[in-house]
Image 1: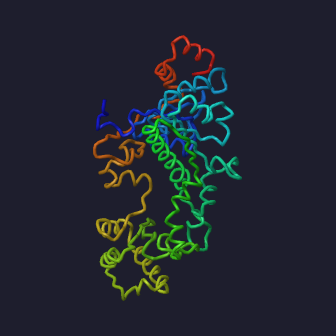
Image 2: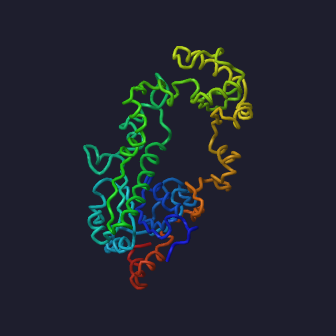
Image 3: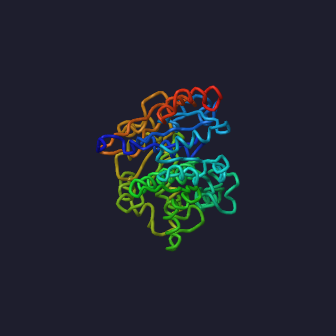
Length: 385
């Protein structure tokens, strides 16, 4: 029977997620946001890694069913394999070899379910000289060249929270790999193993930079290029009230709009193709923008093609008229980002609140065909809680 065209794009897919932190849960959130059924296997008594115990605020865990399973208890691994037999995908984010030692490695799981897409999320990858060592986002983006290219000239490199590695190079690539693998499985009947490494994904995000280096139009010295703040017309400027704005007038037509709105001419600033004019041009912009508060520049530039935006705090971002008009955030006391991307026909509403560990344990086992007496035994013996 054909699927309802308004259903979420991944409705009908079931994915087993072994609870972790960072990029793995983010990939699970992306898949849940698109309608996949995510059964999250968590340790009994686990605490929320990001919400200090308030699971309702652990937004990346939204849209899950939670099964609290003690994988070291007798029969627990077999129970997990029974669930995996019913799944389209699996996500795990442990160090290489951990799932194999548990008896839940990809060979065993895919022997039980050949259509399974087995997603593995690591920082360094499943192999390589440092694959078994610990690391975090900052380390991974350092190894790819991305950190080197970020920041101001003459200063230490700066990093954009853990967005570039964990979520951009990690979770998003895992989610993409899972969807790609499940599409293949739907066509061929055969699943696959997805080796999603943050160093791989972050390097892929750097493709344009490496391309420009190869062309000879990108310099490795920070703030020497158009997209790293090297040019005065692509940067961040302070305002009179301590606020900040961004200018990104790269193309000539947008540059012309900016000059017009600022009542400037090329003669006032010099030829922007001449690098020797850039220091004076930057100083001029710094002086101009610092002479008025941020709201002045919003009123003057926001609805133009000058390529402008104010630098907003998270609280301000949720309240911005454009973000509100598009419904980018929920309108609650603790706003969270809505699912993205959006579709013309398929509906992607905000998934259910993040559950406490074990909130759906009995339901998950019943839906997997486990008999009530066996379920009671699992609870009584502490295998499940």
